[in-house]
Amino acid sequence: MKKTLTAFLLLVSLTVPAYGWNLSDHREIARRALEDVAKDWGLDVPCEVHPLASFLDKLKPLREPLGDPWQFSASLKINPKVDLGTEDSLRFHEGGAKGKKSLTPIRILELYSTDPDDGRDQDLFIRDASGRPHAAFEDEKWFGAVQGPNSQAFRHIEKPPFSLAHPLRTLGIPFRSVGEASQRAEIYFQLSRLAFALEEDYWGWRFLAGGLHYLEDLHQPYHAGQITPLLFRKGLGVLLSWGRKEKGFLGSFAHVVSNSHRFFETYVDRPEGRDGGLKDEALKAVGGTDLADVPGAIADLARSVRDASNVQFGPLAEAVGRMTGESLYGSEEFFSDGDVSGVNSDPKDFILEGPAFEEANAAIFGIVMDRFASAGRVTRAYIHASLEDRKHPKTAGEILLILDNLLGPMSDPIKPED
Image (cartoon, rainbow, N blue to C red; front, side):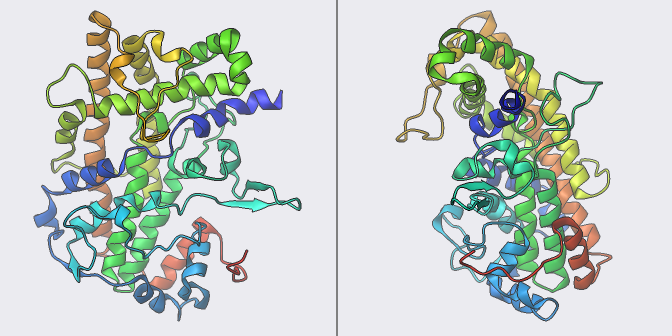
């Protein structure tokens, strides 16, 4: 019974890739969202690039352990083996930041909006007496994987709490909200405030870019829910036919949700039926100068994004189902992002022809346009909130106390071998 009750949460981590959009998507959203306001907001004025050590040296007199990179990472509850200050090739495309002495804020926000996908949220586990890994954080245990790329899911996905007003779209176990994406957006916003207070503007913008990543992830509807009525029915059908023997209970539902999610992201990248590509068209909606409403703290803004994406999750899964019929829910596994030896599935192999496709394509197009346009407004609101905050700055000590409330006060220094 316990396995049955927890299965639907485990579906999320086992089926949904931990990346809401790929690296280029994160960067494109950041750049396009801000290019129309860059000049007016001073985002085109270069600031000096400083190593992480410059920021940590200024933290050390305030709280000595934070001057050490390992301890600083441990205090943020991220994987301290990941070097936050590294400039590996993954983060830079042609003409990037490597070796530059200065960068404009808009460039920093663009390039480093991928930072949280660098492994910092992965492999966060503790070992029991026998050496077996276990989840180190409360929400992590509900997402199944504690090692490997999918172990970061609990920080990049968030389901809203169960609501009697909307029982189907908020279905999930446990009934409370699960996932840390909104909290992470808040943490990085506060880190940026800390860096700006210490006159480390490069790291102020760098940490803002990190927080932006989680806001972008929450715009992906599959990152804001667990399972829909359609996907439940399809999973049950798989379980009662071939799935029970080949996949088992959990695996049958996982197979269905995985195929639906991966098909959607691949289809958006390579859609059929619209000139120029669905994503290319949707990215045009990211630009502008309008702002989303910020209902309170940045975490509240993130939760409002989550809830709006959750509303779209059911209709999106339904549209994918209409577009593909039963072909997507057979025994064939849909692969994307080079899941197996660099081999991707082709959406064309699963698409139905005729009116069903046209209707579903229009529905998917509308949802993608809505989410990308929202990402533009939210990105601008997030950066605008930072600019407004800097007009009435708090001291570094005050901001450290805010971070203590979000993360918990740092205890004894952690040894690297731990």
